[in-house]
Length: 98
Ligand SMILES: [Zn+2]
Image (cartoon, rainbow, N blue to C red; front, side):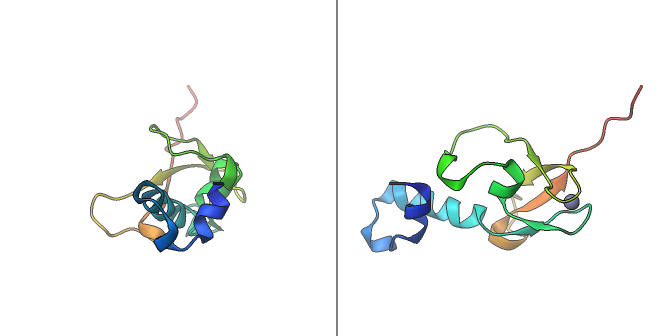
């Protein structure tokens, strides 16, 4: 099943692992504001990947605001105080030029 199909499938038709993945997908499609310019974008827009090309794998994904081009981190706070979908964007600190 494609991710885009999984997103719209009724929960009762899903296996337990698919329910978990649907929950993750539903969080990732929520748009949150870029802390730099306020542009609203979801995880797939930030990562520059199609939803069907995404797979849940460990490790950070390089993301970027598609409006101001600032590098962004996808952050899921340990305490449930995030933005839409339980996560938010954080600016990747800019390393000053030497
Ligand atoms: Zn931005």
